[in-house]
Length: 210
Image (cartoon, rainbow, N blue to C red; front, side, top):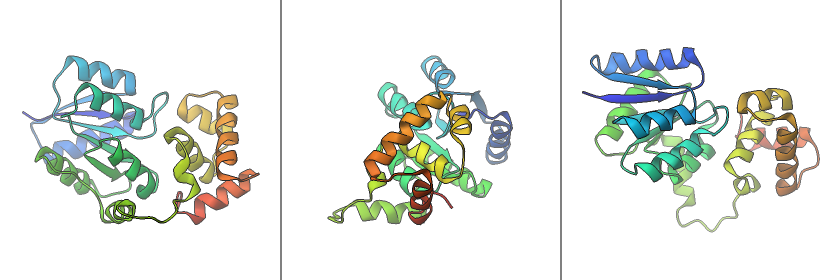
């Protein structure tokens, strides 16, 4: 019997994912976790065939969870879900060991296809992400500045690019507003920018937000 763990901090999203999985596998057992801590507790105590995890969650992110899962159980395939533009975060996810990367904007059958692919031992990588990964292989082209950011810094940059305020970002990531401001300062220093409008313009120009 197929066992899939769904990790997302929104109850409606978890319900929707359960429904999609149920349409693909009527007898599947679908577990739920609201955050990385709950997910790891279930992974340590139960057997799962696939984990489907959101990349943006309060506390530890989906990428943090991914790395901990790969350290604890390297053979357990993890599919990362994201609302962000797939190319950059997708590369980061695949580099960290994800078996697949799927946009939340995709059609439900794409998630089913991704799960089938990773269950067969493969990886699910969309065409745009495949093109981005190909650019990294054997490329001597200077990488854009945002690729110097840590995963959390990149997440904050994405949210700034979407027009979210420090308070909204802090709430979404379970951080203090002061910590978000610190991340913003680090991002601007690394990217040699001086003001938030410049960050937003950069995010749009480089496809970080759409």
